[in-house]
Image (cartoon, rainbow, N blue to C red):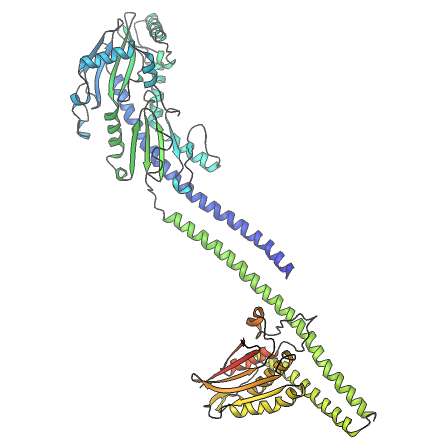
Length: 607
């Protein structure tokens, strides 16, 4: 059995390890698919926001340089106003024209939203000429690459560590390619990045090349005066008559107001032109333009910030959380999107269920195979022990019969009394041998299904008394007393007389073998009517059956003792034959240890 367990353990590892790996990959793929679907939705939402910002930037950059402060082009509703800062530092303010899409959302009161022109001029003048520490504080931004989305692991996996979709791709190969595709969906960022390059190729226009170079030099000089250097793309001037302007850049004046600023050179003089943006109004507009017209409004929540988010902000309020930092010139603005579980979880549920079913089926199959093989091995071992036991049981009476027969044949028995004793021994051993052979043949017929059973209704008491008379010489010859107690008024039941006699003889012989050292040396045989049934009980006063063997005593060839060290005779067929014959007669047979000591077998025949 140890070899069998070892081989089964190896087989289990060979089967279960690939199955477990297959289940892991299936569940992992399903979870990845769900995450990628939500990632795609988040990327699409942020892309719509980027497109809106590109529209804002394009509207402001289209305003003519010369008529910047007097232009009548309509502005988006959150543009507070436009300004121009002259080389001497004087600030000029112009209120924004009415919005082009005021109907998309209720426009807040512009006066309540912004300060009067004098306050705004003072604020702008202080911003450009004042303390730079406030300017640096306003420019502080989250530690995230502009134009990228940061995904936080869903809380169902118990890990809220951020996975950047930029520089740190996931380790799994299929995740890398999927995330790369998702990042390529952000067309709004790509269009805005491509615009300065287009200006470099075709938007440098002027009366001559020298004027454009002088304008570029003036802008670079102006930017160096503030300690800044514009990128090469932004140093390509746009010449309108004698004026040149760089693309707009973003500057955060405070947490509520964002400046879109461009450098303008007219007659070798540097000017600043730009728009003042209400951050809260722009955030509301971005939210409504990307979520207000679809079903995502109830499942998604977006928050905007110019100072970034704390590490634990917004992570516990939704299944999926994504953070996006907008591309330049709006890189001071970040958005955090909280998404509920939008994808139907039935597929994932099916995978979980099928995975659990596969694991359960594999485990159950392996256990069933082990049980079947173990039973077959144990049964084969019992058969082998049975052959050894039958050989021993046959040899013992035959040896005694042969010895007594040879002594009688050779005339070496001195007296007639001795002769009679030898005759009795020969008869007893012959009966024992006959019972053994009858049991083996009876069990063989039962096992093959060739045993025909002829049941007849009648009183069971005469058959019990006949069995007692047949059993008494054997019982008393081994020093026991047979106590018979039968109720003559028991009702008739269906049984076969020969089968019942054989059952009672086997039980009596079994009691004699296992209660050899009992006190008192008595075997009790009782027959009573109880609870609508006729009950036959055979009891001894021996040590009983150990509890670990009690459930197996009616199995064929089963013996509680080791075949090499056992002290009692027998083949292991007696109780198995009793169980099979009682079952064929429709009787219920059970065995139990009694509190006062001893073992009792009970047969219950239905009336």
